[in-house]
Each structure stands twice: as structure tokens, then as C-alpha cells.
Length: 297
Image (cartoon, rainbow, N blue to C red; front, side, top):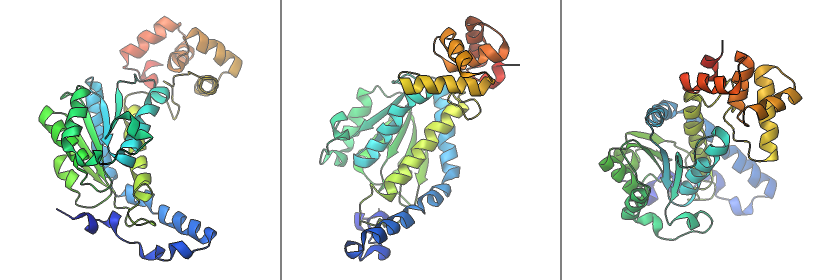
């Protein structure tokens, strides 16, 4: 097992040894140059990310949940992705969960020591009623955080699918997961501060996992979020524009159609494209498992 000090995320970056004496603009350009390599590092793991998406899609089709879990920054990033799924894709809040070591309060205030307790991860997942139908996605930049590894171990004992996201090669967490996603982001500009490049990489992977999954589940038509939940003025405006763009009608007509569809853009789109009322549109969507493209002629 790698020691903490040997992890690439913990090593000193030779390009930033004079970080404290750099003029601000040079410091920022250096950070930007380091960040520019994150996307290519993520690209190297796309085959593993695709395998993870397949696991999540299969679980969701059988009623399982996507559960992100981690400590510190990693846990917060999982929670961030989880809370964005209901408004973006119209899923129930209970279908995509985010769990952080130390409990919900740890999102805004560090709970020291929580990441070192693997048993706590088991307790947190047990409290969430983890079942074999679910998928556990454990995030840990180091790949060796005891809380994250405890989550993976417990997930396996329950029979849930398990995915590990780390930012080091040969991560310990990979050995405890069905799929190990290892993003080698290298030394941080600020030694050991994995909220930086490692955090960016984890956020990118979470974006891919949830978005690709929702596309595969019919939550997207073209590149439009047709299951968006219009709960505020901005989202109501977006929903109207989505209906208009998808069907080629003007915004006032789209607004009226959206009202007739009970505020559900996907239903409104099928109503217009299939020439049916709201009830018939809903039936078509049920029959096609929510895919607009197969619900319309």
C-alpha cells in the first residue's frame, strides 16, 4: 500500500516552488496552465467512466439509486452533483444521494477525523438503507481514505455495484470496487491541496456519470433537458425555450402548451410533435420508457 507521502497528489510541484514570490498574474497563469491538463487526464479514464455509467444505468433501470459518498472536498463534490439532479433531470431527490463523512453539516464546516473512520461509512450507508439494487460511488482524491474504502467494502457486502474515483494510479480504493476510475492529476500547485486539480477532475467525472446516465435513461432530447423541473422563474423561462426549440413553435405558444402539460416540458413536446393531448402524450412516454425520440412519429 502506498504511503500518503508517496502519492502523486501529495508531491511537491517543481513548477511552483517559487509560488509565494510570483507576481499575481504569473501565479494565476501558472494555476491555469496546471488546470489545463485536467481534462486530458480525465480523457485517459473514459473507458472506465463508460463502464461506470453502464453500471449506474442498469441499476437505475431496476429501481436502484446512485449514491455518492466521500469525505471533505470529495464528499462535497458528490453532494453537489446529487442535489443538481432533481432540478436538471426531474428525478426524485431520493434517487440520487450524496453522503459526506461527518454528516450534512460537514458540507459547510470541516469535521476533522471523520474521514479516518471506515465504520462510519457503513453506518451512514446503512442509515440510507443501501440495497443490492443501488450503486455506491466513493470519491477520494488520495484513493486511500478509510471512510471511502469502508463505503466500498460495505457496498460489496450488501451486493451493491461499487465505483471508486481517485486521483492517483494504483489507488487502494480501486481494489475494493467493481470499477476504479483513476485520474492522474499530478502534484498540486499548492502541495497536497487536492481541492484544486484533483477536485476539478472529480467534478468532471461526476458531471460525466450523472449526465451520461440521464441521457441513457431518456432524460434528454437532442441536447435539451426535457425533464427539467421548472421551480423558479429562470427554470420556467428555460422550460418554455426548451419546448419552443424542440418543436419549432414560438415562445407564447410554447408557454401555453407547457401550461397544458402541467409544466412538464417532455409532455408538452410530445403533445406538439405527435399531435395529441396531455393524457395521450403521457401514455406514449410511458410506453417508450420516457424517450421523446421514440414517442413521436
